[in-house]
Length: 437
Image 1 (spheres, rainbow, N blue to C red):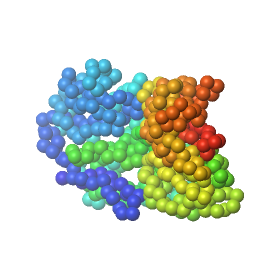
Image 2: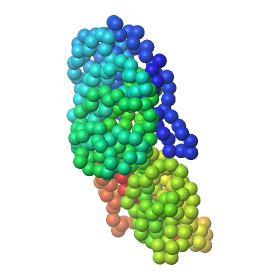
Image 3: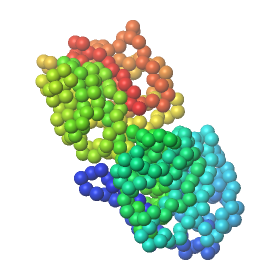
Image 4: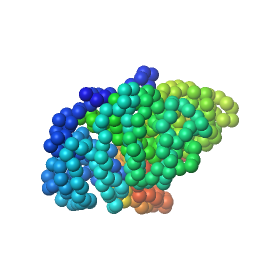
């Protein structure tokens, strides 16, 4: 049985691996049939049914999902890609598949221009001590890219690209590499700053994989890697960017501008009250975080956070300086439904003498989140793009804290995620709307 392909070095206190035995049972049928596996790589595509010769072969595939090998009759096959559960066909193509041959079938492109890419696989055993992988550029959002496969931590100025000027729909030959640890980085063509970084991954002896470069569903990188394996229990393995992004929202009313340090290295600087920093790309893992007041150098926060690769985070600074505290929030940047935006609501308005009152958040005169306590954070709620009236009331009352007939509507853009929050103490309460992507 073939070993699985890539083992991801998790940025945790211990080493973790993507493992599992491969399923080579498709080989037994090679003499009579063709073998085909599927990958849904259309970033804005709906869930899909894949219909082969009028029969649903794969059902309810979500983006980045795929399958192990399925046996198909060798001959010309008609493949329809349908919106899941419907007869609405997005792609209809025919292919000739041969017996004794494995294939990878990839659904590519944006939903409005979806295509199919059929690749013949090579499942002959690699040489002893080696593994084999093929790279497919399945990201419609990026221009030409360079792909670097190096030993871990080779400085980019000394790294040599494995693939250059690689474009959407291009695929490499199978690259035979010595078993061991590697780092995969992707840059825009001719540039040196990675837009994707796998961290340390392990290529196992005997492994064979097809690795697709896809648009990331969320996180700091625009890209992610998805590997097709022979393991029927784990036919698709995602290797997200080992990095993540972090920003600070400053909601402490009496603290001056602040800086943020991770492991004593400054990563965010000069954030004023009632404002948000830009997202900064940082290493994931368990990190020491300090927030220092810029004017005095006083350390306001000194603690530990755990950051996962491929995610976006907000570090929210709250309360008065004498009782200052912070929360780490994961920001959901997956796109909302078409023509919609999504908003998360936060109560970050302290009271110097009493417990702050709970609040209701209203949009266009309707309560969307009720009875939210101080430090309360809602889930994301979708709204149609366009202008909306945002108001805040004391919970369960008609006492208006923010809003009213003369307030200016907030404009929400299609496809965007937002955080709407109340800040400052009750007598000076104000709102803050920031984008989360």
